[in-house]
Image 1 (cartoon, rainbow, N blue to C red):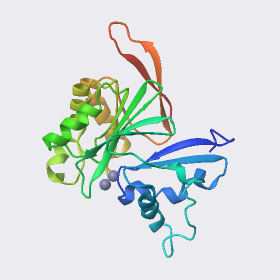
Image 2 (image 1 turned 180 degrees about the horizontal axis):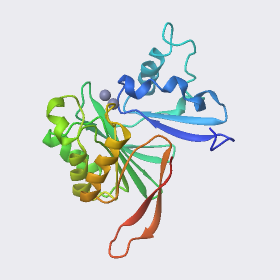
Image 3 (image 1 turned 120 degrees about the horizontal axis):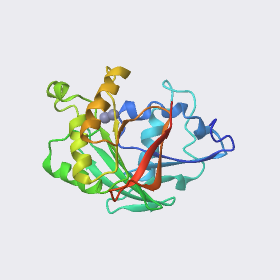
Length: 235
Ligand SMILES: [Zn+2]
Ligand SMILES: [Zn+2]
């Protein structure tokens, strides 16, 4: 809101509806500002998504109903075969997570970003598809909740490790890897250590953090065919 005081347009992608993915939404200021257009994307029909979100915004949980964006067409269903919504080319793929979840590949103006979190590796079919959809992505945002040491005690919880994130980034030929879905018990120094280890195997790795942005530009790295992606902004 401070960065774009005149308003703007933004996109919110729902991978699934566990609390950690929707509880912040009632406090998301652009929803209540007519200068903003908020697009919601999910794998569900618009009325189904609306129902899921409206449910948490009623008494006794919350005193204000969600405006659900200004126009009905701001709620988009990403179909199994893919779809184009609001200028974004979208593809979805299933993830391995309790109660199910979906990842997305977003292509816009020659750039691509892949969201693959709330995903636990280990199902060959699903893992292969994640890698296929992540092929050549400019930015791969992958679930790296656990360290490999912690993972054994959390099998079946629906989350992955930084080691697996690096593996997928390599196999998919992604250009930048963003580690995401940090474990709530990991303090900043733990995350920093994880990124250091991951960077030894995949140099272009960063950890997602609140307020950061990633700018895709076209500067070539000598000796490679890849574009450079610079993490910018953030604090
Ligand atoms: Zn979840
Ligand atoms: Zn989650």
